[in-house]
Length: 307
Ligand code: CKP
Ligand code: MG
Image 1 (spheres, helix red, strand yellow):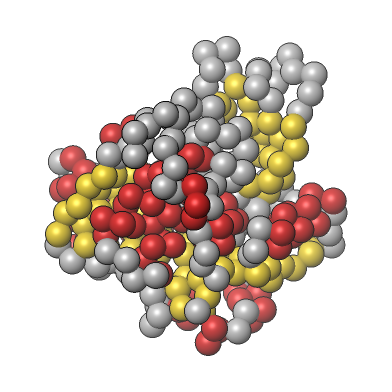
Image 2: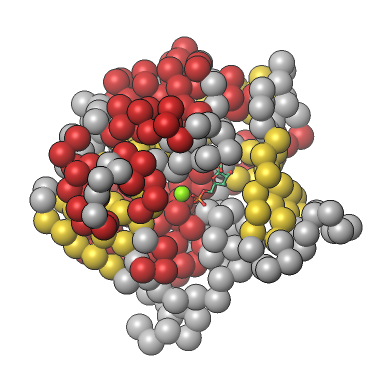
């Protein structure tokens, strides 16, 4: 019973100020699928992550941190390319800005043969994102091959559109093609509208995406909570208000919370509750995944909230 996720994990350097004037950087790690893997492990799921990192200090740090968090790691330490990097700075208005240094990185060199690192029969659910197909043709082919290999057991796809990595029109076609072949799609409203531009609001967007194929569509609405359409039935959850330190990683936390309850067979309301709490908690920490909750954290009041 293992959830498999694959993609690029990166080194993360962050400051609480504009990088042009910062004198110190804090070092961490990130990468959407790795964040989801840690979130799932913390919530008690058995989870594996597959990817390439450089044969360098950042790569070894990523592998060590994922293992320390209870994730089963299937990594290629690629001697031919470095681990990618993400710089997170805070602009003068307090907004987090992300800059990538990842072109040609080890993580982008994922190839379909890498999937053989995993015992295919042990996988009970595959989770992939729209970041990986943007990295290289080989990485895109790997996502396609993984979706094909594990569609009999179940696949989820977080659109996670990254406008810095590729053109929106090219991306929209790829996102739609993958969405047609999976069971669960996660998207923010803007991302949903990339797939179904004529949609009128979150529920209509979810219905139109479901018409492409997936039985389950979850639209993440940030401070407005989220909406899930499962077998034609709509459920919603409100966001949990928190003092936001950094929203990067909140979407992944939400996905981890939702999937953790889904693989346990819990109903939609429970999946959404855990998702919303995990998303909120992730916002309270400057790192991409460090704020992710353990199961015991889910029933504690967040920021003085009455529970
Ligand atoms: O959608 P989220 O803010 O939850 O995703 C954050 C991650 O993989 C972050 O860790 C970063 O490394 C990335 O998304 C990315 O490639 O942008
Ligand atoms: Mg996201």
